[in-house]
Image 1 (cartoon, rainbow, N blue to C red):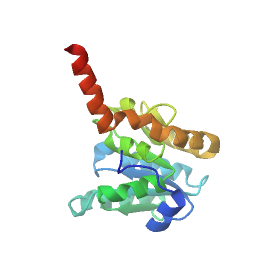
Image 2 (cartoon, rainbow, N blue to C red; image 1 turned 90 degrees about the horizontal axis):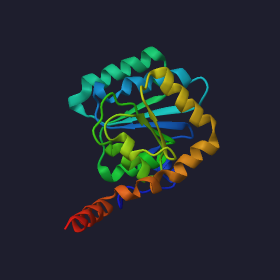
Image 3 (cartoon, rainbow, N blue to C red; image 1 turned 135 degrees about the vertical axis):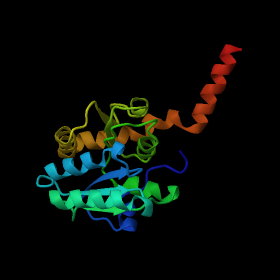
Length: 200
């Protein structure tokens, strides 16, 4: 958790050149199973009710065709000016993106552990994600929201509801880092050591 910690939002946005829009952040691989298309469609459903910006961080030259396809979807839905693609960045830079964002949105169709959710929460950023893989172990109700089936309409409704409720959004952010401190490597090692001691 030493690398991933909250940074002042204004400072993070200034460094990254982001404005005052509500930022919906996706970080991860550019794959169909990650549900980025669902986030894009959800954003198109709420663009008229909120000053939003979608930041998609991940991929590179190898994923150019997939990124081009997502860009085409953005143009078709009229949110190409609101959506920004950034190639994968060094881990040391990710806390800036997490801290700049209002919500980290991970509508995966399939997920394993949910490392991105853990990193975002450690940086104080609430997470909205699919209830798949290990997400339920990482995301607690005070700090995030899990969706059984993240359809674009359902995802848009949840995002809009959170953005409309400043108290809810601030409360989620306030609980975010605390909710994952027990999942740090130090705590994991201590828990494993304690279990071995108990068994022996």
